[in-house]
Length: 441
Image (cartoon, rainbow, N blue to C red; front, side, top):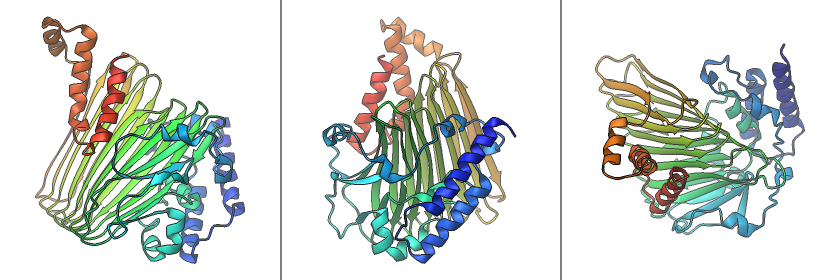
């Protein structure tokens, strides 16, 4: 057994022991049983290595060497509230919920929508007051028997966002969830757990923003389960802009019912290692799913987007477009799978991944996949990786535009297909500012 494997085994054993000795959580019997099952699966699975096909190009060895402490009490914020507040995206006109190192912060949060439109609670409170809904969905959508980090989250997670939209309600103001890693004076770790339930004929827009403050290492292991019931419409945006010492691994698991619509926009702008699992099950007829992704990394940063669109029933539609711009020694992975089951006739499914490499040392591994077991479908997939279009660059320079400005224009135009999908103006402007600053460096 190598030193690395031995260390990972020790770390795993330490976490399994920590579960047994952790502070008692006021779970119901059903939830506690689920957590026990999760830690048993984590003990069996262990941390993934590059020998695992799903983790072939993403090595978590450096993350595990940090030996993060998942005890919430030891992750109390060290930054003054005004400095944390300055991190929030301004002018959002939204419900704002803030978690600092995974713990709900009421002083920075502000709920403006009326209670009849939706319920927003810290997950730990929802286990007590919305027990029936939490027991029905917690750990039943995101598979903790196959994914070690999901199992770890299911076992330990206490805080996070619970959002429930009643039937026939349209939430007029978006919900923005901030997950801030405060690593100003010490390493920080958090395992937020989110559950969003959009009841039939409802509509809601939710944003998850992952930000950080400080130069010490931080790690976020987040799991979000989303239920989109009959004829509901959910727009979900994920923004990741943390420090170069931040590790972020997340799973978003979505279940759609008949005539529902789900749209996801994932924007990864900075982080040492980012892994996004986005899994959608279209489990009824006439479902519609849209997946958009943009990643723009430099230095030695790494991003890995794994997506799975599971067409389980007939007459549904999915459309997926991911784009990446990689500079310096950054590395990227796109692994997208469309799965069309035998009963899912008349499925329309499309998938595309496009990448621009700005340096010879940047690299991208892309693997779009189709698995089709029905015969009356329209499905396509494709991927491209290359450099900036030299002809377009020559055209712009011939019009008197400097080389740096011309490159910036081409990169922004490349990214605009994704940026323009962000419906909340303040969020879109924030992303544009970060990208513009990056392009002007």
